Image (cartoon, rainbow, N blue to C red; front, side, top):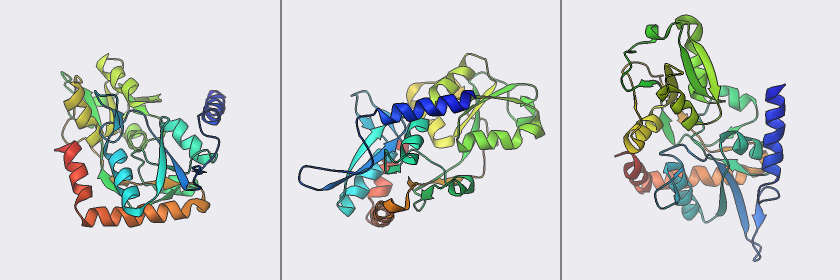
Length: 254
């Protein structure tokens, strides 16, 4: 019941955002694609100290659009609201560190070629003595709703005997571990490493507690937007070939 109510509220929120439906046109008649993204998923999308919205996803989309010559409007909605916006046609696509996985494809997600290979990892407090999965027995693990990290945690839950608490965003999940309410959280490894380094979070990544990894993809959920997906794939191929893609990764990860 609570999940149904929450989803309904998200849909109402999305419907009230400043756009009234999918791709729009400028006064000149030029098409502008609406792309939804998360709000805080460093280093893929976040607001920097100059109050600029930046990140790997932000820069890759800009580079691909420049290469392919299309216009877009990037809307920072948050993970759940961004997905809902694309599902109901209020946005045309999503770029938000979305892991390509069969469960999402079965639900109607149509992914681009993978643009970044990421693992998920368990993360513990800076002074925690936890160093292996067995140490989590009887403890609580925090996860972010609907993510590959949540799937990874659930896949090991029965084997290692821990409890799971679900959060709507990454900062709340991190804070639950820092406060000691959860013994660990599960996050995409590059995101966690960047947050620990840049934000000075009192967390650490134990060795050997990561997944095998899966690629992130740009996603549409309506076949009518295949044109945008095709342009993304073509542009991604080109920026990988000309070095712009690697320069973006180096900018945020080196």
